[in-house]
Length: 285
Image (cartoon, rainbow, N blue to C red; front, top):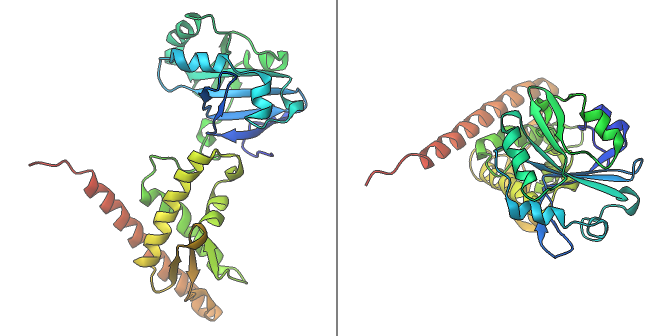
């Protein structure tokens, strides 16, 4: 699977995204759920990446990762066999938590490489990779633009508010309406693929959360602010039918139609934001 968002130095080594927020079981049939799995056919090597925002490592999680074998990657995580001769579980944490993370790995002598992020740098500070090319790359403070990661991979997450979702998907809907051959219907799946370039790599549970939020916004848009232009269809995962397309007007009127839609979009997003704020108000009996 290709990936435009991986840093060039990683892509040069042949690494491609395999899965995001996916889960599989180890040899003990215990579940592991890494944030990211990338693999290289060139090096026959797989990286299983676990990101840590805090300073604590969970012993049970580390143990489950330690029980992964090549067979698990090939048969359960569905990594190509020629990408999995060697693999590493990699812990990625913040610089301020480096010492605590080291202690967590030392408690059971886990050999997982520990990468630390500081500013726009990613550096290997503890243990080694099974592939020497990666040791050389990360020992030299690998530069990476964290403003693009993981937002280029997944623009939404389970904490995204509906107004944030709307800001992404309503312009996409306008794009489908304004093409020379407008689509009569736009499905939830089509929108998801459009705004998430690695949609097919995402694990099913995370993908379902993503789809639900897109579905909620499209259904609400069709039933409220955009009801003059859209119908909501709940079959086959959900879609909107474009019943009245302002862009079908003459070229001289299309600019005005677009400005009108932008106004509706602004009011729709404002309404979603206000509804979200009301839900967060404290309750005083």
